[in-house]
Length: 247
Image (cartoon, rainbow, N blue to C red; front, side, top):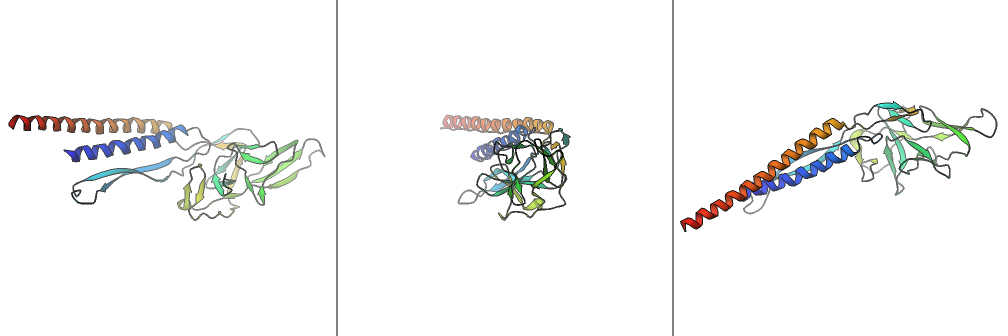
């Protein structure tokens, strides 16, 4: 009887964890450039004296869905979307280099080009600084140029180039800050073949419909596990009553 309770208890626990992952994906269905997490259940035996007949299940993140979201035109000069494979290099809070596909950029009061999460966009020689009173344009190859609004008319100045990379997806891992990094911890080399779509953003690749269906399915799985625990508990009580009667 305890085997049923043990298996059902572990099933319920990890069903809740998978539900949390699905909920996390669903909450990012409108996050620019978000890549959904993938996970799977695994059955593992329990080792030790008297545990040969025991088994439990765990929910494990197995990777990331690197599928593309749709590219939507915004008309905003500071918006860029990565076309096909590739990533925009940004500076993480700890100073390391991370990668994102969220191209909703902004300019700080000091003129530094950042993502809306406040991470500096990495250029060929460090952060990119935009002069004040300038109209910004970002080319498909990542070149950032400006036209002064209070200087020589139509004078185009190149500020730098956004670093775009394209490391193998199997070598990328998602960090707790949402940025991707190489497993080796090394910065990826710039890839000139990566192209950007100016004045556009990539949507999340999360399917809200599929996520909602998955949440309902997991909720039913959880209810089933709880019912198994309750059934096992009732059977144990009834067995105890029968033993007392026979005694």
